Image (cartoon, rainbow, N blue to C red; front, side):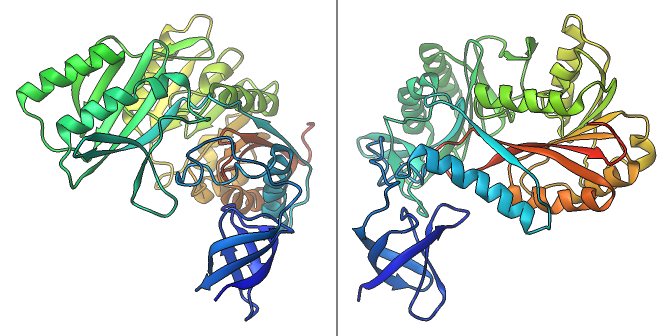
Length: 414
């Protein structure tokens, strides 16, 4: 039986939230604050919603796959309202920890600029589906059109379909992580069946036709047409298969600018969770950097790139699991500034060591406002102040929020 509801606000996942007949919150996908709707209630979810009074901020979603694909959940919301909401998500997360500071941005990446994506590949009777899972579903939605992805990612879709036809059973869904590099794409496939020698040869031919520079299958190198290269801050890096990099070049540039601003005149910098050197390499133009990363292959790639990079100051590298073995205060004492860019879970243990170390300047990058705010509280309690927080939106039309922030000791000039 449909129930009439009014949407009060957006949740952190982009769902509209209404108060149901029992007083409990009800979550309804793709609804907006202020809208009057009718929906069937099942548990804490609203289904089969019908809009009676639409929001003034509601717009027509530009992508024809929007209703089926689970990749974007906010295309129905006008972009100025998306920006306001993402700033508010960060401000609310900080306020929940008793931190009040200005939140600026977002720096929003343009459409058709997403340079990495993980496609779902499903073999069918007539060929293969190449796309993404539907919202909260295992169903693969074929998506020949996407307003987010870089054209080079869309161009490789036919080759991915051929890979699925060749290496997937009808019961399997393959996962293909595809990354744009300087002169082609890198593909890493998981979930496939073991390949024969003949299939290896056929995959190499597919890669040659589609300008796939390198392909790994279940972690095994299958084809490499040329040395994969990725330019970071003007420095050429050879990334290991499936390496993490920022989702868009524009987002990477915005985060690098924020980190350089926060580090300021520091001459000895530690980069924690350094990855391939997104921040280490631009920082090395002005400071000596000690880069710490848990993945040995990425540490090696960064070390090689920094040695070959012209005009860089010294970059030392260390492979270390910062969750199990965070750098201790005495190890951090020699640095003028620290950069920390942890995964979504944050890095509470390492943040506590930073707080004890009294490093004068900290540049923090985060993809999770809640864990960022939790960790920020530790720094504030230790005598740091939050000078600024900048939102960077590399995932437009999604509830995903990234940010950069600058922490300074109270006695340190900003």
